[in-house]
Length: 283
Image (tube, rainbow, N blue to C red):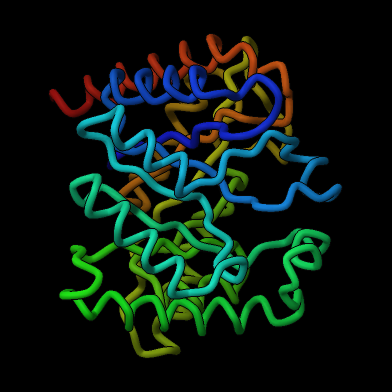
């Protein structure tokens, strides 16, 4: 199982130097992937969770591509209805080509109603638009003379049945976000059932979990996977691996804005995870 990291690309304290340090740390520790989030208009509903400044993902990943050599680059998740599909297809194809085929496009339908209104995109049609735009993007990429890119993996986000169905029909992987440890076991069975209904193979799972190390064990029933002592975090990763996930993405932002300015604690936890993962691969 490969491991990626969701790097904060928003909030006071995020600037080019901080993004550079994150990229060098994540790649230097041997992780497989660096991912960033997506918002365009930081409306009040967005700012409540992801305050400005917000670094747009395609611009940010293009810059980070020049600062890295090996690590894959991705979005978790790009909000598909926000951009014309041919614009997204062009930017993604160019980024993939310029980075040497390192792009993974995690996608979702979005949730911030005020941001949809600011962009003039109908909120109620976000699911249908996502489906339509994903088809259009794949059609555009099929013209390899024009778009000049290798295939770009699409990870479809969304923890609901609708998200699973979209992943089965249109995705290369299913990318659920932040859940309790037991939830994924049940969801994996549901994904397979949906795939059987549709008559297609179930896509690989590539979940994104929290990353928050605590001194004492977290025993609450609603504990998120990736939250707890380092032993709990490693056990969660082992469970996800045993469920067959090909990649898991660690998300070190848990709502505390001081973590943006002072990422050292998260880096120490990532170093412990990387060391454990390397020792497993060496066995």
